[in-house]
Amino acid sequence: MKKLFTKYREIIMYLIFGVLTTAVSWGVYFLLMSVGRGVIGIEPGDVESARYIALYTAAQVISWVCAVLFSFFTNRAWVFTDADKSVSVPKQLAAFASGRLLTLGLDYVITYAGALLILRIVDGSEDYAETVSKMAAAVVVMAGNYVFGKLFVFRKKKGRDA
Image (cartoon, rainbow, N blue to C red; front, top):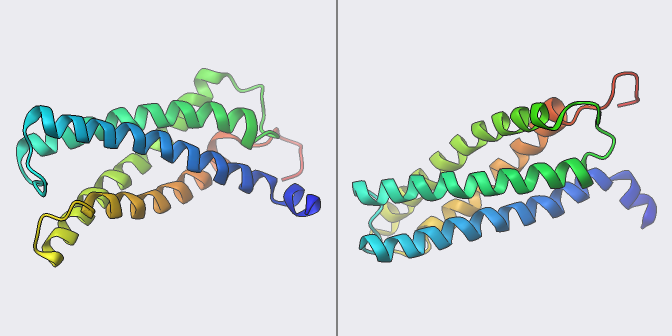
C-alpha cells in the first residue's frame, strides 16, 4: 500500500485537496446563491432573469477567488512538492490564477448551460438543476486544473527527472 501511495502520491494528494477546494468553492457559491435569492427575491427555477444572472456571476467570481487562494497554497505546500521553489510566490500565483481563469469560464458555461438544459428537459423548477450542473462542471474543471498546474505552474526544477 505504501508503494502504491508513493507512486501515485501527487495524484492522490491532488484529489484530496481538489475535493477540499471544491468544498470551499461550493460552500461559498451555494451560501451566496441561497442568501442572495432570499435577499433579492429570486424565485426557485428562475435562471434567466437579470437579477439571477447578476447574483450567479457574483457568486461564481467570489467562490472562485476563495477556491483559487485555498488551492494555490495547498498545491504549493502539499501536492507538487518537487516543484521548483525558486519561482517567486507572486509569479507562481499569477500563473496559477491565469489557468484557473480558463477553467472558471468552463465552470460558468457548464453550470449555467447545464441548469438551463435540465430545466428545459424536465420542464419545471427543479431545485437540483444547478447542483447537478455544478457537479458535472467540477469534474471537467478539476482535470483541467491538474493538467495546467502540472505543466505550467508547478514545474520541476530544470535538470531534475520528470
